[in-house]
Image (cartoon, rainbow, N blue to C red):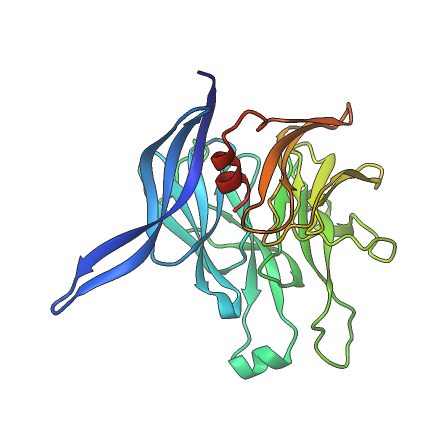
Length: 321
């Protein structure tokens, strides 16, 4: 039996508790460590559980800590970002005003994320554009263990805020991030905007550089993933197309096109700097659709179906859900 390794699984179960007068039933969202093979799935250690929905899980490069994003107030795009130690289950809340998609620094010591700069009231929230900060907080020591005391955050850039702003760190310290592209000054708040892709290099006075010329491209960079060497960015779209951006040349290549995603975009993942895995939907965008897991060789320009021999139930419930 060939091992596929360990993954982190978001589950939902029914939990029961009591108060003075009544029995309370509630949906509890759980994060568990799972050992996965081609033929079996073994539930292992329970890391975290909460009443609020779990939006994202991000594992540090050293495999010792996990960042978990939970929903606090979706109406105000407010999410809690916490880090959990796999060894001790110790938990530290980094922010309660973050976006959905944080990332770890290459050394696993710092967490990168967006924070919303809140308006003073809901009325002013409706009238003013929303701004936020790309922030960095140190959460682990040199050995990869959670720091005992919470550290202050460092603001790296001021951006237009959206809850789907995404950030990816590279091995050489550059930071790629997406955020809304607004035209300012504006006579009224902009309710329609595109999501741009930018690079920030802290070693060069924190200068931000657009990676895609929005005047020459209609590509919406909401969901993206960077290779660790920072040379390639994968960008999926809701229309079913996956793109590869060469950071060095600016060239954008379409690697595969499929049916439109009906309910979600599945984020791609780099297995190595030259190998990309992504999910392609098969069939229409209904609940009966299935999908396949593709391993794409960037240099060869070709991909193969890793899930060809998987059971149909696994492909329909794990890859497309």
